Image 1 (spheres, helix red, strand yellow):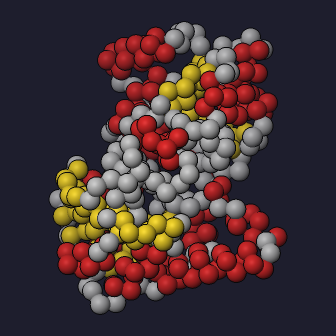
Image 2 (image 1 turned 90 degrees about the vertical axis):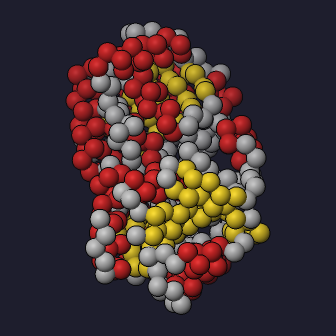
Image 3 (image 1 turned 180 degrees about the vertical axis):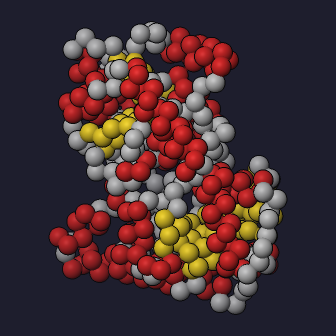
Length: 402
């Protein structure tokens, strides 16, 4: 099967749907292309230089082609970028020339996705889309009823109209969480019959619990390098150090814990405007972003994973490494934490401290961690997700590929 993944932006080694999913289909023997603009992820955001610049380099790269993990990556010159109006020159023409069986486009609201859906009327490929927009990053989910008429009209002319247009030729929109399913239908205008819940798949070969003496020694060495004592509980957060994610809440909780004489530390991997505030807190260590292939060793060196506000795929990565996780009580994707972690009152450092104190017991952490690792392996692995997607691809094309 020839499969084209279309993304508005792309950074090698960063972003699951751009890196892990296409790679999995290539591993299964399919001919896989990833077509993107020359823009890096979040390259048009004001925070790019401060948050991602040191890690990824310049925001706009040169056009070109290369093979990454068996996937042919093609970068086309970006000719326009304004919010979801990101246009990669010649993308639709290139997709049609490849004559694919399947085109998978991220974000049904993207202008480029709308163009691809129009082209589908004159092509043989079947269009699939994905929605990873969840309630915690989409204000309308909670406050739409209180919005002004102008705000509602603007949303309907952007999100709903574009999503509806793309939905005319969309076969299925795979949505990462139950609330993402609701948003896809309620706000993006896709027919409910075309929206399907499909969690983000994760690499459970890379992200796994420690196994044997080699992993034990690696854990000990990394903790020693970070200055973490054997009797200290290490919490870990990975991602942007920004207000939207609010990792500073974890730093505040660590300060309260240490003030009370509890042996807690925290490691933050990322960049953002909260970095200085976090670094100033006793017991907190801040390191730059790490490539996702290197993250597993950090999770296995930690004792608890904490994401104080917006959910992240990193939560499931950490859970797959047998870490109990602590997340916001406003997170709708409860399947990510049920049985393998706890929640706290969002943005309340004292309540986060309470949740962390409840995880001091090593047996409890081991129980939650084991549950999380088993759940991620059985229900959230990229193998499981890719198999489910492939069945829908086969049904849409009327073919039986292996």
